[in-house]
Length: 363
Ligand code: F6P
Image (cartoon, rainbow, N blue to C red; front, side, top):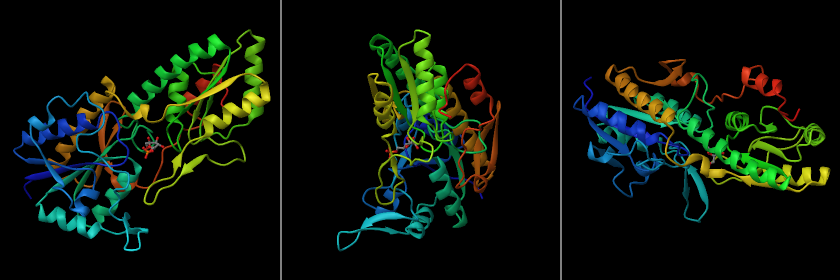
């Protein structure tokens, strides 16, 4: 088969670096005389047929986008073609399998390959589309850094740095007011953002989903600091962190979407204020962590991933995810990681380092 037409899709939550992948893949594709396209707003646009689902990606379309956050293609969290939410005649939401429709459109558009940039949800969808005959190359994206088999995912470095900068800023207020300050960061079921940003911004307590926390342990840390004349405490909590024998804090769940997490920061701040009598405040960093210009580390990674995805398509080495292993890029079967999550290893050096320098991990 000679490759002629290639589409790129960005799925799930946006992340800094997506545009850098789109540009690099487009330029590398154009150099091979391929026609490059972007799928607008995720797979949903293909099945809805409201607007032309494909955007032509030429040199002009990708000019100057490397340093821009978001994705010029648009993305959708409710874009799973196997479970697409639609309102039925009674006005109720129902999930429909629109995957055959998507496959038909792919053929109708005479596309030869799809580059799917996404996280765990997108790779799960990709593995099912592969079974339906769509040739896919995957690119690992998520600020959460929770995809297995890759050292890092694009977007993580920027999100972690944004979180660390914000924690630095809040630390000065914590110190000035002698408060307990709790910063809630993203990361769903993995504590990568909390651990890396907390460690680099010298937080005193870091709570991650992998280690259920106990208030006794946090209070002990606060008291130990007071005895040393440090009357403020900085606490970083991942949105998916749970109290021992407690439940995850869930704000809600929309049809066809993952549950929306949030609230643990406020819970921790209030409880600590009750237990210690000290003033406390909480801040939820939220989508700040997904926005902004990608760091140079993320830009470089994204450009490398985009160009490698095109090399994989050129070699017709389909159904692979491009991953980083140390300084190298490798290709692994997408099916190896579909439905799996990479959590923080409790015996890893970063956890050991946190413990060695006296950070309380809530246990
Ligand atoms: O997966 C990326 C992520 O930012 C998570 O860290 C967070 O829980 C979720 O997406 C938020 O999604 P939404 O933008 O749909 O609220």
